[in-house]
Image 1 (cartoon, rainbow, N blue to C red):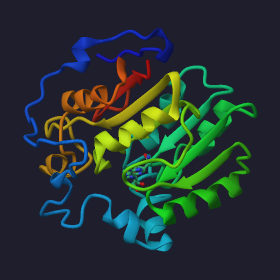
Image 2: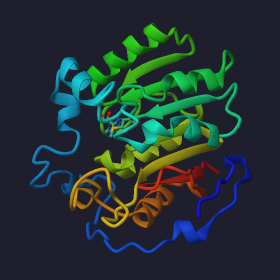
Image 3: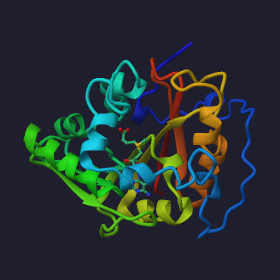
Image 4: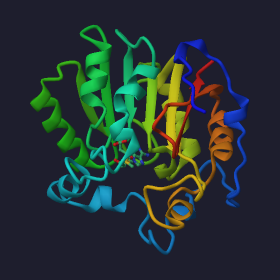
Length: 257
Ligand SMILES: C[S@@+](CC[C@H](N)C(=O)[O-])C[C@H]1O[C@@H](n2cnc3c(N)ncnc32)[C@H](O)[C@@H]1O
């Protein structure tokens, strides 16, 4: 059964947050440790290699538009349900939003519209070609309240306390230095600011958009582990949000105290 939790209701659903995970990762880490899991047989150069190495043309043809892995609603639940997702963020009019690892900029037109003229959106990515692609999109859609920045894998080049909300949509499992990077996201938020994480359940039984054990190779740990890591950076867990149609994904909301 699915139900909807309004972002501002702040209700926790422990049943969802602590659901059973069959695959528990065994990696240990320190503050500066690079996750070796991101360099596996299938990803010898790390999970982010193609985002950084590929040309704009290659990124566009593989990830954008019809048949594009990021944007085709037939291939990706979040592409199909992006309106629902942004709606669950609640009243974001006038807010300053940081879209971390924004990729091709799937969410930008919607976020830009939702925050309105008094709000702003900053989209960051480690891929300068994705940032270029987003700049084209910003121009094409005339998004006057939206800008982009290229960041590196350890931090975001933004003054402290600049944002009301940070989003990581299908990004956290790509972050190579989670503790260091999430501390930087933490610093970028105002006190009371929110962090919203959408990621994949690491469970082959729940996963249908990629074949076989892909999810085990691609996503290094389960929701509980990610939640613990994020909490260890200072964030306070607020709630999970269930969104109908996003059956492979979970959405967790945190707050900077
Ligand atoms: C699976 S894509 C998701 C893109 C976009 N959020 C979406 O949902 O369409 C992951 C993105 O995260 C970016 N990325 C990975 N690590 C990052 C980091 N530490 N900081 C910012 N972006 C990062 C990648 O370059 C890539 O664009």
